[in-house]
Length: 50
Picture 1 (cartoon, rainbow, N blue to C red):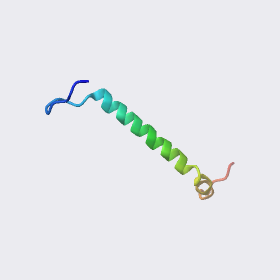
Picture 2 (cartoon, rainbow, N blue to C red):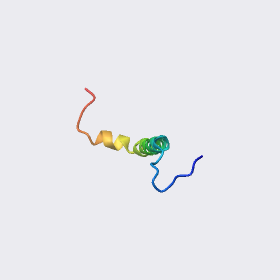
Picture 3 (cartoon, one colour):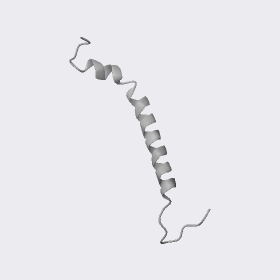
Picture 4 (cartoon, rainbow, N blue to C red):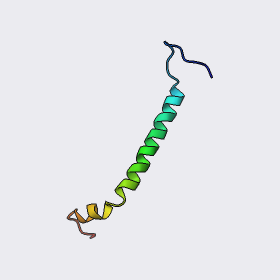
């Protein structure tokens, strides 16, 4: 792999891949953190199933 010099732009592919991994991790943590509080959130909304 080539070394970056001071004035070279960042590799856009690796930046995009790092962003995708970060988004996947954040969405995964959010999914499992909201699961235990979902029943309380549903009971707090004044709507019926009808």
